[in-house]
Length: 247
Image 1 (tube, rainbow, N blue to C red):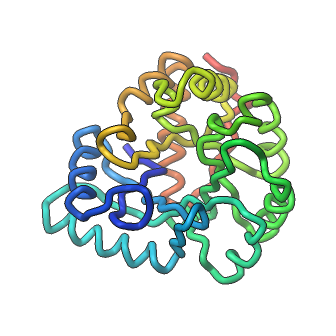
Image 2 (cartoon, rainbow, N blue to C red):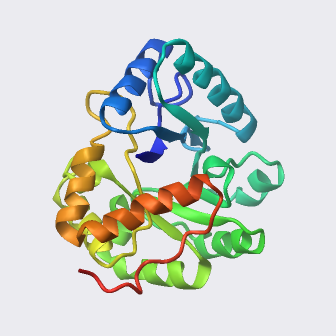
């Protein structure tokens, strides 16, 4: 299994503070059946500033530690970019780190609203051959109020959506869980990530999340989501899924 959203790199954001804690997380991920993690430290959110270069360096170091401790897990570079008006400057300065070096960039929206620069951002990224992947859309209040608006993003801007396992199993409450399941049932979700930060409150919950999708949408949709994660790390294109009839 491939986790496409995880805060496992130590001392970079609100994930594990120490190398020991990060290694414990890694061992836990392996027990949950995860073989590959795309590390996605926060960038431009709060005071976190994790540029592509810094992330690549830290991923290299962490992979070395995993090998030394015989933990069979592979870490690939990614980033959770908090969308701000400065997206052009961030892109031009090469500070953005797409998921596993693909053409897909994980983007976090503010939790309360959709930024005014959203469509400018989509248009700019499309022009530069980058596909935004919206992290946990089910947690954004404006999407909770009107989830159907994401279809325009998917169809007209090549945007992809990533649901998180914690949302699917109710960690963030009922509204978020219902929005997550609605988006899955519409087949508007393209990727699954854990968004794990630690082993207490924000754990992986991968098996449970997968089970929830299987119950709601059937095993063939779950299989497609897993194939998408594999395609992502191999640099292939992610098709939109909503044309498939649901089971």
